[in-house]
Image 1 (cartoon, one colour):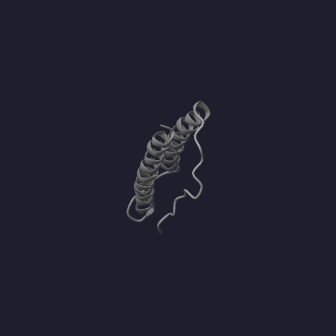
Image 2 (tube, one colour; image 1 turned 180 degrees about the vertical axis):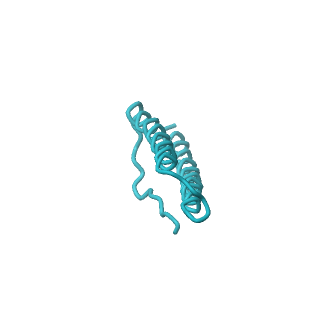
Image 3 (cartoon, one colour; image 1 turned 120 degrees about the horizontal axis):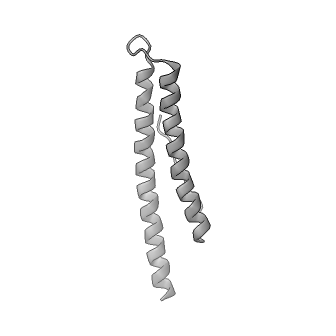
Length: 89
């Protein structure tokens, strides 16, 4: 019974890691696409625009991080060593 539970937990962790890597890659790609808007010759913008854009990103990242941190506090889960993200250039 314990081995079956461990197998299910390991499968769930593997799925989480697979999805997390894909979603982080997608999010980083989308954020990097914002860089093309920084071409002042093509797109005029103000400090207010920049503050609003990055304020929205910061708030959203903090909300999502808070959800994950709250999940860590609510349930003890064994750590998975070696899990990391490699950002593509």
